[in-house]
Length: 348
Image 1 (cartoon, rainbow, N blue to C red):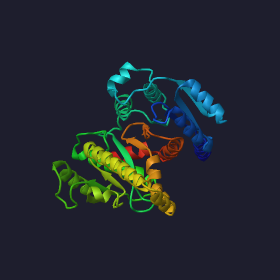
Image 2: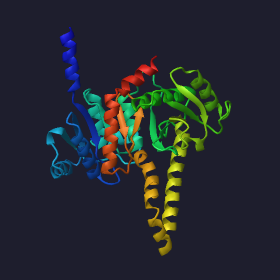
Image 3: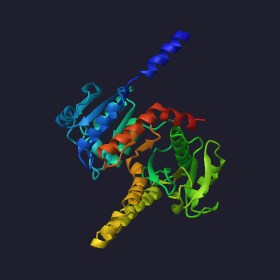
Image 4: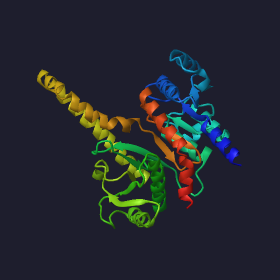
């Protein structure tokens, strides 16, 4: 028996990880997705990628990058589900689109560990819910985003950011449990969870947040730290923030546009005259530090938590470096057995 256990352990050590990568609909073009995947493949010989997209482009890029062709399977598709299309209808109307083919493969082949896509968020959500299904006990899957904070090196996760416009209090409790399991894989033993609200005091907010507060406070699986206001999120007061998808999406989009606005205004001010340009030369080192705060957050993936299989959404504006970083995080979620840990937490 001991010999058999040792044999199974050795077999598990050399198990090949299989990941589907949808290469279409990235704003920088499919070649960036392919190159990022090739870079990730070069770091791990125990990973096999199923690349879905333009067969000729994928083949030529693999040759250009001198990658090991044996690490890749190519599935041809020149059709993407667009952001402007109705997600559910698009799967019916475009059965040969890259995302439809990806979900069909993920559903049929139990040896595939994850699906990664830069494609339509709505289509990724619809495919996950209707083609893969939720973990037993999960009311609603949630989409999680990553943000930088004022504390150097500290990130904060926020969920849901748009998968569920209308939520019940118990949904938010499950979001907190799923976020906790994800953060434990990232080395945080007891993740601090906050509830997005209009005030820190208990009893603040609407009927959803007041009820959710009570349930979160009673849940022994969660290190609940109470309400958190919008300004506290980027101060790094907690490790994860839970909210309904409507509030989360509005918060995230407003924050993104504020960052672009400030960046553009600052760039305009620097370029205003020869004197301001010259002065900026003495600030380059510090400016690069500020840019570094956002680097990892921009590269981080947005897993769709609560599904029976691992589905990862990367940013629609992903460079090869972004794709590479997302795949490294995907490796961590697979090896950490995230899906099973969420299932165990929910069914305690």
